[in-house]
Image (cartoon, rainbow, N blue to C red; front, side, top):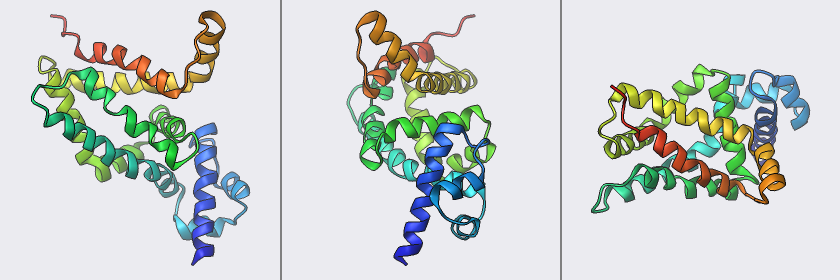
Length: 212
């Protein structure tokens, strides 16, 4: 049993690293099995398909992040005053940073994986996330909508996707942006600092009134 568990973990670890670095489409099962030092039959036994393996890699993070994020949203919902959009987005920072306890550089890897799914149009991931974590997503969308009631639902749909795109670009370029900031402005930012920098920008973009 331990051997099977170790094999499954090795496959997940290898796939996670390769997916984050190369993307889902550019990472073959042969490449994963080579890095994990297992045979293809082991991947088929534990996961059945590449799509299932992709979902399993993300689930290791989503199973931890989504409930923690919902707890933060629920905490804001029970406060006497309506939470601002910036407060709602900021409440997700600690659950994101806690992923570093799950895996080394877990926060960065998780956001990179989300970005890969977003850029590569992995439709099955959208189905997987909405099916398995829909209640958590709904809680977030409801909280955001309540903080910006002047934004129509259709417009909010677009703005939340623009927000996701902002995160994807920022994380994809984080190393280069940090190098530029250090060289030109003497700034030295870690992942938390980068995330906190982008939150006011996203909050302002989501809540700006719709032009007539």
